[in-house]
Length: 256
Image (cartoon, rainbow, N blue to C red):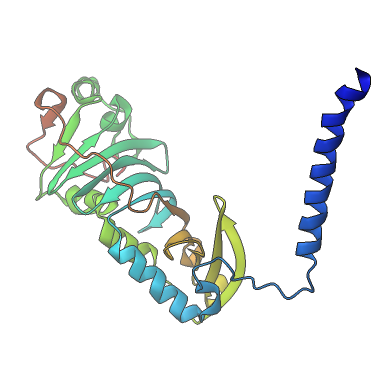
């Protein structure tokens, strides 16, 4: 009985050892392995061509998820947005603790935030009771931002897939091909600009050459791009969830 119990374990162990030996022998096969075997071939191209193909792939994509930190016009934002041609949805956190949600469906832009966001006063002044009372009415409601409001142009930029990608993918300086790496388990080839100070882009070596990670010039943030072409639902909020503000919403006053 004891001998019968040991036999399967010995056979399994032998199989594992044999497989390991085969793998080790295969991996030591003379040092002539092609690092681009099984990839999309981007690693064989020049830095300029890799960047060009990455931008072309991004330009043809139907959807993307953008997450990370972005510095724009002296303000620091943390983004978590899903974007496509007809709009976008997600959350933006501004430095200082202001957090709000954005939803754009075609031209209609909505902003949703808590009481603290709406009650916040310019210059850090304490809000009056009337300000707090008004802010409570807007809490967790989708506030429709008028097209003519200065906040519309600024906030809608976070939901515009094409313009946001164009800005994020811009680099400055001489391009050079960097090292190979991985982003979320996907093999990448890196392109740097200005020795890295002008920006860095990691481009997928698997499948389409999508940009997967961006380090922006001048330390203006690091962003991950994922879920390329993964569609998602995008609907205007219900009428009972919406407030039509009807006048300007100042981004300076409300931390946008």
